[in-house]
Image (cartoon, rainbow, N blue to C red; front, side, top):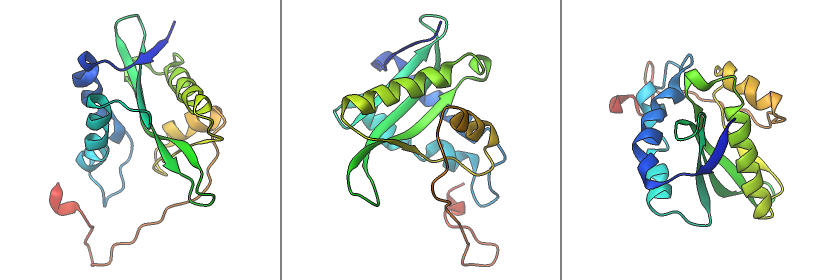
Length: 164
């Protein structure tokens, strides 16, 4: 049985080590796996070291005392209404724990956190080619809302590639 609890300081190395799995899909050629793994690193570390009312990091254990995944959820303002809502910054599940209800439990706990704050909805972003994640989200009732497009302005160039 999957149990979900708030992250503890002792979970930090495990949680940060799981960021590498965020690029476990066909990454767009203008991005690198390192960029994807590092994108939320700073705000995740902040949330782990300075928990507050505007975000939460939850870990799933399966079996008990064995972290199988985590979700990092924060408060954002809705672009169209300006009202606060929950946004899933990061969700990842160990490959060995996939298909066991870990993502469902983590997203359910994130949704409960959002409801407890009086939010009307939860948002998240997912790469178009991350079909595994998109399938999970859609099975759990999440729907695509907008599509983000990208165009490099230099021939063969991609912003941020010099960081790889």
